[in-house]
Length: 397
Picture 1 (cartoon, helix red, strand yellow):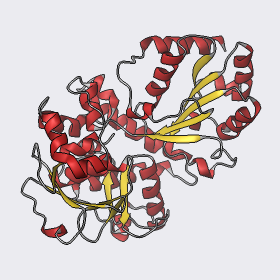
Picture 2 (picture 1 turned 180 degrees about the horizontal axis):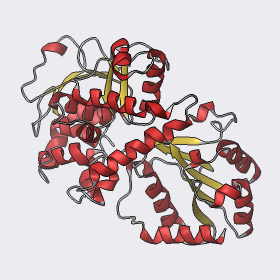
Picture 3 (picture 1 turned 90 degrees about the vertical axis):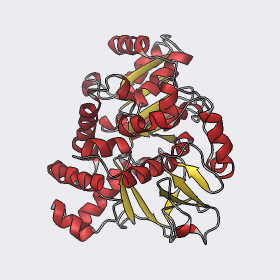
Picture 4 (picture 1 turned 45 degrees about the horizontal axis):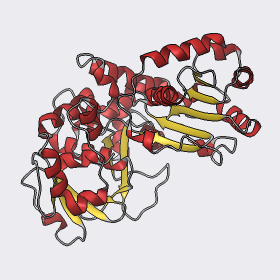
């Protein structure tokens, strides 16, 4: 117990509170049970430690613990909390809950037993709270943390600090918003760097080792996090990597499950299930046709890698530019909006807007008969009428 408190205080001494992620302002920290899910490397641990440092410091009332700590091999979470309470503890920040066998049940019991205990926990985005064998969903508010938006990347690297825009703001007032930004910086100067190596916060540690670190992160997701899925076979990891490589090279990828099954050697039904969980793990983004409800066994209309950094890491040559454009747009918009594939145009957002993605010479021909339809163009600083610069969608969160 004492060693865990020492570790917690040591971690606090090294965490900076100069920059906070977008999700911090969205979380109701006064709620007694909050969950933060997200892929590895997106900054969940830092978010916990920042909140602890800002509100409690090293006071005995609060502590950070990780459930993959060796302490929890021989001690239960419930036993730890009993000792923590005896020392005046009321605020518990728990990392890596998915590494602990009975985490959901014990969190439920702690919530029900101690009415003045506040718990924030993090876990892999692959966790499905609703499918736990205990009724945790009624007690916990769950949030999902994405990687850096382009806006956050600019703020983190001290290039520009500005509030996020809504999708409605961009659709109705994009020229004024773009003008506000380009009066301060030229976003295109930094855009390519972001697409290549700006999505995961660990780029700040070493640019030279970024892709090696990203590859290690991907391996941990495929070999460790995905292993929590019933029936998942880690022997299929090389086959899944082959699938991801195929995604990185296509423009964009419309899945033929039969051919994919033949290429990867993964059974068709298993492949569709893996696609579902690869999306939950934030490795891919699967998009379904407009007007159709989705299920775990439904084939998506298109599949993209989750973010452009993965495209650069997986592709043996430069990724296709058209693929990068759509991957970036989908990644930034899907963080907080519903995205479907419409009959005309590339993406339908919230059943309200249609967007067609392309280069600066892209025309409105494919969406000319659609209402609330826009062209999203790469390689332009500012747009006019229904043409919006691609980079501006990086300011949605």
